[in-house]
Length: 415
Image (cartoon, helix red, strand yellow):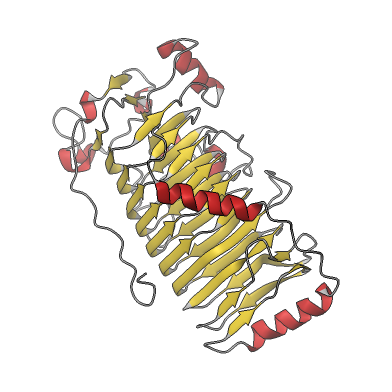
């Protein structure tokens, strides 16, 4: 992996790391009074209000909700203003936001029994310099999501930190027009997850020590299908944490050691990233049929289970694939590459939609899995035929797609 390829990423990471090394604020003896005051401010908020939360460590026993648009919640810094929900007894989330034109910045949300912050059905959402963390480290009992916008539009998440979520540190679902940039995500099951969303740019992030680094998924039975995601200029390394997701959830099927995972999603570009030392594979491209999180073959009407029009180019790969998760993958690695060998950088499960193939049984050009990435190889595991015809090499994917346009945030987020 080339060092110092992205000075802006390195600077952002240094700044975030420096922040996390600050001494925590002293415990605030007035947390009970503070909670009542803060709840009142949330209830009485009006459009244009700024709810300032001073430096301090505040223990809250009830979740907070905001239903008024045009409000900003602002702390004194992600390691200075800390809302702890470790002893929460009421509410499914730490913060539940049902509003548009919403900004939250410069504070931390810790140890929620459910999601740290859920932002539902809003337009023009900014999450900036927010830290969500479960301070005891990875554990199945942790809340599922750190930063969780769902059914939103025009979303910016930047300069934030998400640690130890039992599903995804940063998750954007069923949303449109999204930018996720310059964040640090560590020790989550999924570092960053884009699910059933349209038009997402994920760049400049440091994604380390998760089970799976960056996930781009489409799930059945949801309001919209996703497509058109660009993953670029990220550092995606050492995502080898054992999977601690709750049994039966989609992320529980993600193998530890997955750098980038594309599942059942179309028009995805992965380029200009540093991707290294993810022990199962640096990139996995899979269909619904190989995930194991539902009954095999069970597909909801109008749901497309196949990944298509995938373009991988210009990344810097290093290491990875040397110790895959699970007995079947370990056995396959040894059988194909020996005890000391490694999987190629890219693994594809090989499932194809027969409606989109040519006479040779391969995907037609407009639907192909294309790789233009130096000597990076693809292993087609051919799971649809019980791995009877595994193919390794770059020639089968030597193609290109027209590049996706950048995501442009609409005013007032056009920054």
